[in-house]
Length: 498
Image (cartoon, rainbow, N blue to C red; front, side):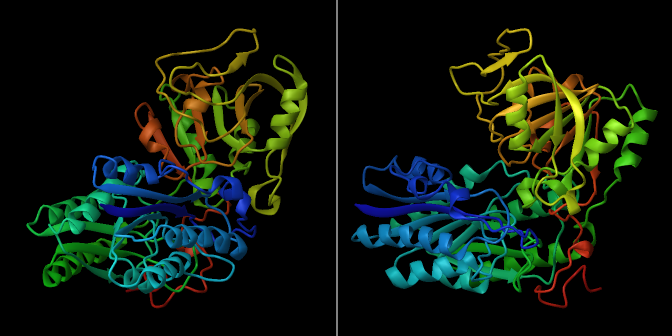
């Protein structure tokens, strides 16, 4: 019988965000324990391990918070202690599987995951394998490499393969314990800070294809590219590649070096180009038959540690009298509450957005608005979206995919042609389900502004006529040159010409 402990603990830290990520953002003390091993990314491990009669799954923690400022050291200590407590109470262990982010910074340490893995390794000794899955934007550190038996990254951005990578990590564990393989890991850290590029096109796709070709080689178990997360301003920030081979360190090192060289050769293409708000709106006005057009509000992406309440695009849409436009979403629980009080079908006075850091995210928009809808934003299997429209009818469609919105309660406010969806929960725009839950068909709109950098593409790209990636002031900086980095090691591209 194999005794395998599984755990999930993640945070992508934006060190430029002044606020601290406290324990409540991980769900609080009562919600970080995973009683059966099926919460969050633990499920990817669980689904593989449960197929074996000779495996005892030992659950531990499932703690994940939306990207934001540095993690409170007390919160980190609490979550880490619960993981270590589960390890201590497990008795004999044969392996540990952990899903981490890889870019966590606490108020006490630059290397949250490295510190955690060091504690776990010290607790179990050197003979028990620790398999780790991390985000594609992990900052791989020496301490992480030293204490993990193997590390694999998500392959995709948008991140649509996390559960598949967790399953892969679990399969490596079982093959290792069965004696079929002996994983050895090689990694190369590059002096490179890539910007946030998708893996579906351009240099990102070229690198993904090169990685997949390496994985086809005999005796190669896995290959990964970590793009790093430059918004976590730490010494070891930046790109890395990892290759895992079966009992062949030379093979792993050779292919890691080859993949690293490929990434370095493409370094000039790992940068983004952006459009200003008004440039994009000029183009939209010039091509009225081209719709819907997506404006990606990249710098206010909560998925990168921003507040999600910036009003720069909203102000320009209303000032230019754009019609059939949707802003999805603006985080503002106060305005959601005010909309509920005003009531669906009524007009009220609202002060929308920019309540956290208005000196960066723009002034709140003070305006009259018609309350079009209020929705819980949820689409769960076997039930209809709970959204009551202004005409009193339940708006439903059983053809929408079963999914739960991350935006909490959503109020749709109509500002004479611009509908702003105000959300009670901070989250990036992953998909269009909460838009639809408010009775709005996104494919029929002229403009849809989304709070996302790349993840929105997996949903909206299917019907978008055009996409403009917008740069405007926000806490999720998209350009390395504007990020005011002080801790990152130097020299490093593109901060230094190399």
